[in-house]
Length: 80
Figure 1: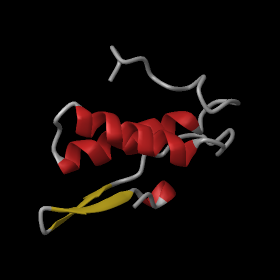
Figure 2: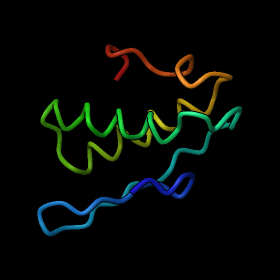
Figure 3: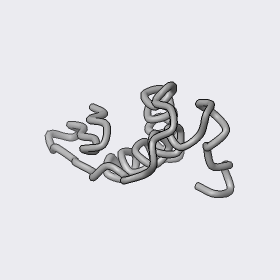
Figure 4: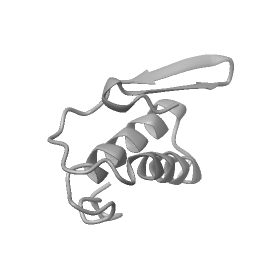
């Protein structure tokens, strides 16, 4: 569950995992939820742990809100 600036949480393997939100300057919130989902899913496909999935999702969500479009602030695959 994406909680915006408060971070994100997920329940997996009978455990709850939490991650803090990134404090970034917000330019436009369009695409933040989609970026979070893309980060989480890509981390799952990379075989990362639930905590690492949350971290990537929160990172991409934060990156998405720092630019005027929902893709310009996103890191490249190599930057992940």
